Length: 134
Image (cartoon, rainbow, N blue to C red; front, side, top):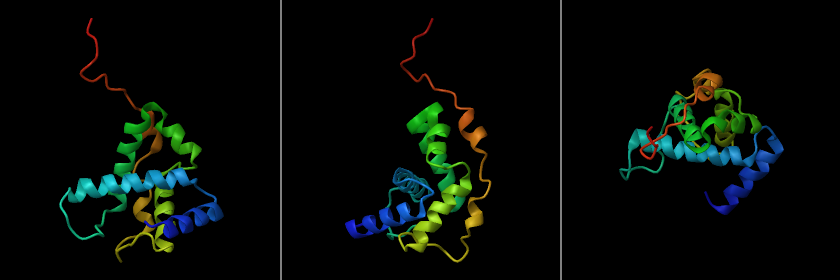
C-alpha cells in the first residue's frame, strides 16, 4: 500500500468507527500469514487468494502467538468478538478496493468459523525447551 492508500484507509476506518486502525494492521499481518501458509514463499502473482476460513485460522494463530492468554481481551477491546468481524473488516477493504475478492467469496464465509471463547479462552502456555525440570 502506498501512502495515499493508507491515508484513505485511515479516514474510512475513522468514519466507519467499528474497529480501530490497529485491528486492520493485525488483519494485514494475518493475511500475510494466511497467504504464506497457503502459497508458501514462492514468487508468483501479486494477488494470491485465501479463503475466509484460512484467514480466520491465521488470525487465530497470530493472536495466540502475539498475546497468549490476553488474545481474547485484545480482540474484544478492538470490538472484534466473532469471526464475522474479521469478514466485516475484509469487506470494508474490498469496498475501498484495497483487497480483491473472487466471485465465489461471500461475507458469510466468515460466519462461525470458530467460537472465540473456545479458540482463545482455552490457551495453555507452552514452556518450551527452556523450562526447568524438578
